[in-house]
Length: 371
Image (cartoon, rainbow, N blue to C red):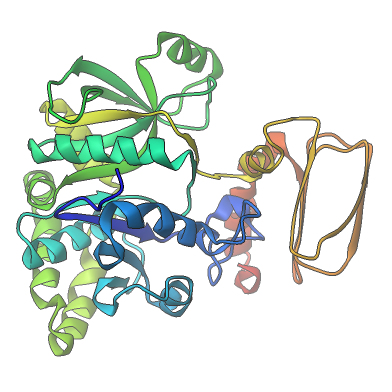
């Protein structure tokens, strides 16, 4: 499994600010540009590194905002200019992935694309590669294919995919139809899902022939589809691109690909799933980040920051420091401390999901200077 997959193009949507990781993640320095694992690489760079063996460096595209172009190209110096697709403003995942599909389909009508978020953490790369290769084999048969993560615990933080009947696909022994998508459950329901083993975490990875994806968007969101085709037609003409993007992009419908494509395709029996047996985390909040950096041991205190100066005694949780300040945490459990030059966050892992509310409040009160 060392050679790139023929006709396979990896697409990395790199958008969003990761508001539940404020004040570490900001509009001008979103989550995907940070090293959140102590590896010495940003999440975006780590995503590129695990996709390069599957697609090759010249067949990885990034969809990102205009404001992040320089930072993205700094993280990925080998990316061809033609493979950086810039959004004038966020329009959610259908527009981002659909734009990439439309552009790449014009360049190669037979292309198979795989969409992989820029800000997820994946370990055990050979198992990830095996899942992607199965997904590509399944996509060649005309299915829109997702990779669902085999749960390691009864989590309430993720949506779920329910596996249906098995498929017979050469090169994809674990392929199955998707019976349904399930929103984030309560704890008792999550425990039931975990025990059943037919439910997988929805990691938002989609692998499909570009023409199949576009036909599904056309069937469910025809106006959005028409806009994407108009953008793609002008994209590789530098003079024509700018005016078309400025005119068309702001009017595209904002909708997640789960709703515009995945759920309708599942209802038609056109959505398949491959179970992923690798370690995966979407690093959705500081509780997740704490667990990720403490080896899963709740009695540990995770510390992030290149020059963090932390004194701890009988403390658990996570401290993130981007300042030279000495921070002492004594006798506190599940603490979250995030210290930056202009903002300080103190909460607990139990309330980590509520950080987004702080961001919303700052927007309402006009404190955009710290966002």
